[in-house]
Length: 197
Image 1 (tube, helix red, strand yellow):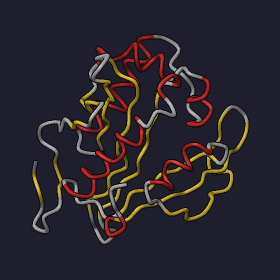
Image 2 (tube, rainbow, N blue to C red):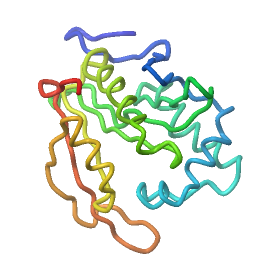
Image 3 (cartoon, rainbow, N blue to C red):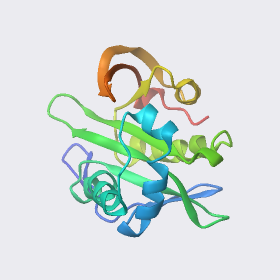
């Protein structure tokens, strides 16, 4: 990893694998395209993320490269695949994007996450997010993490509130998906506020 003169991370170097009691958070590869297609074709993921599903496996590979692999290689962000240790398979993804590294704005990034529906409400995302937020605030030395959440997504709102995020307001009609404008709620967490739950 490479840091600037202020001690802030500017280049990742080798992909950082993180481990939690039940998960391995690892680098995603094009071999994960079938998981990506299944996960991002789930209507609940599509609707809440306002992102149309890939039409083919080749489209899934292209999106996987664009959204999960290239951001790390280009030092713009990082997205981990959530691999369940007991089953050795991916169950979701999470990470940082739109990583801003300074220039008067401080170090900040946006965060996103998704999880296969059969693994929801079992604490997996909380477990993964704690590890990723620890990495963001310590290793990346972020000052601010922002999450945008659909106003209808109450479980996600509850999750980030439990982790200490503050609701900042709603961006009205901020996203356009399938013929309608959607509102986005904005939540943020500062380094000085981060406390492991």
